[in-house]
Length: 351
Ligand code: ADP
Ligand code: MG
Image 1 (cartoon, rainbow, N blue to C red):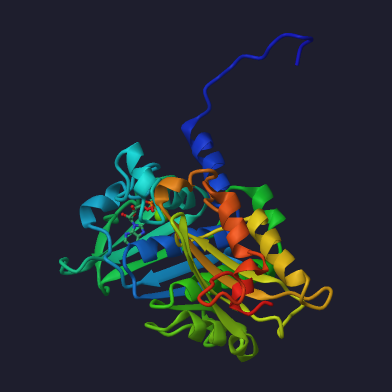
Image 2 (image 1 turned 30 degrees about the vertical axis):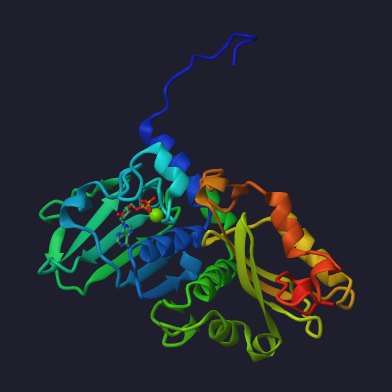
């Protein structure tokens, strides 16, 4: 740089823009799996099977039996901001699907080699398509998409994640850690979506790392995934007022573990809320031995108009109205305990 002279301002190359944006949505393999799993759920899948190689960095594959993608849409499905779920900004206030911005597949195609095999109920065959940087790949001598055999539903394969983002790939150098994160996020979704059967395994290996049967219940899945000890000590949580509805299962005060496990869903999205976590932990702290924690699964539903899911590209964070009311309800004081039909954590036997 020469002295104090400003540098020339230039427009970034679209490929660079897209790759930077993609790195924000897909920060690690478990974000990619979360996005792909949400697409499968949006597609009405009853079964979601995942296989993974090297913590997802070599291979991520997800197979569902959902509605599939129309052949005509395969051309644009991986472009940024192409979606079947949202058409105008106002729809965001009532969004009933996980997806809405049409960024996941695009993002993955900018940082990995992406292949889609899909079949709708009406189509006589399946189609396979390969993508690079948001577009159908041009492969000399090969039609893309090409017809192939397949069942109704979609198989999405992402290989060599971050092959073109050296720093990111090197920062994620422990495949076992990434693998555990994948199993963890699928496990959480499996508890919340107990009607859908899930599995995760390492590609090419027989054993599964987790599996739930279809048409199960949250408690049965907690038993299968987190163990009978936790499942035996669960209390049911139910609360409803004019602002929100809360359902869930939490361990009672006779039970505690070293690890604080908190599955929190707001309008079916897996989210983090430091405020709710703190409120809930405070309720238990007075009852549990020092340094030990509960297991909680809470699902909060409120008018989508009161939730802003559009805070961050990963959608892990949500902002919502009446936060203070909800927080006080999750940890409501003794005044509701013993009043028959009370619904908060304390009211559910945490006395
Ligand atoms: P969004 O979910 O925000 O719409 P995505 O990039 O995740 O954006 O997906 C783009 C579109 O591709 C979706 O709107 C949907 O129509 C289609 N799609 C993606 N995955 C699947 C799937 N597993 N089954 C059926 N359709 C899918
Ligand atoms: Mg999506």
